Amino acid sequence: MLKKLGYTADVVENGKEAVEAVDNESYELIFMDCQMPILDGYEATKIIRKFDGEKSSISIVAMTANVMMGDREKCLDAGMNDYIPKPLRPDALAEVLDRYLVDRKEGDTKRDAA
Image: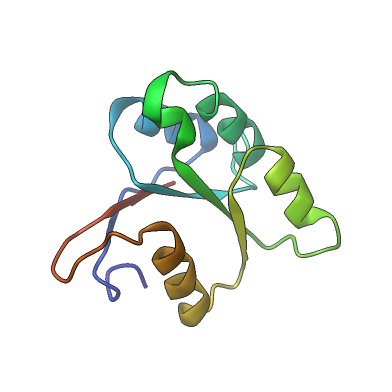
């Protein structure tokens, strides 16, 4: 879906790799799966929020199948900026991208992670 919308993405296998990717690369937006092995998305987000400089304020959007009452608040309490439920709908994904990547110009590519 991201590719069809003109974006590139780095994909990781677990929360530990997500933290390492953010530490080693520059991202404008992170899609964080909440249910990952080794380190879940909540803990990975808390670690990223402790980074020095701009990396600590990267927009992080939770991607989760957890859609029960209180799940959105749990994501926000962990330091995530927003929440998008699975299964992903293309229109909802595009809306989140537009919200957090407002400076995107035609032909530019943006990087998303995790």
